[in-house]
Image 1 (cartoon, rainbow, N blue to C red):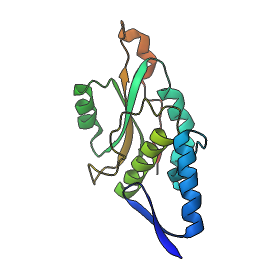
Image 2: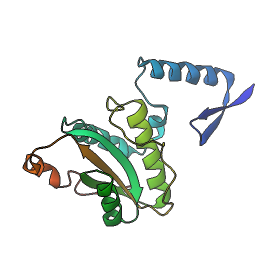
Image 3: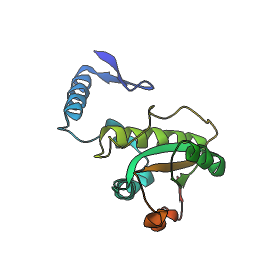
Image 4: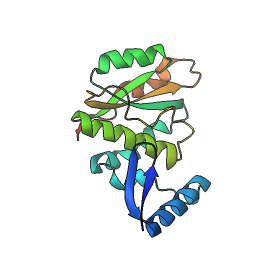
Length: 167
């Protein structure tokens, strides 16, 4: 028997009944917090997967109340948009063709919303993939908890992802 198993809204896989039962079981364990691997992480770009520890270390800082992962083809304009929404820092960390960047955004958002210990800090409302179809950069931007002096964050002014990786 062949059925279609849907992961999220955009991905459906043609699989056999045993695979459906296995994936259903794993997704229930993931929901319960017992199994901490996002299903999408198995196909994530290897360069992005290698960046996850660095992203987690940066985004887990206590001074950051939340973060947003996005894509753009104009980093300057997009960082201004986010600044107007209350975000403080904007770091682009990967570049590539629009298809690779689109998939990278989806994979990272899914990882941070499903498998990461930082899921409560991930402020993305959607799972990625929408928005700018011509985007060639992936970025992350953060919101800061009540800070008395911006000097406390001087180290964060530099992009910790230099050089930007090519996907």
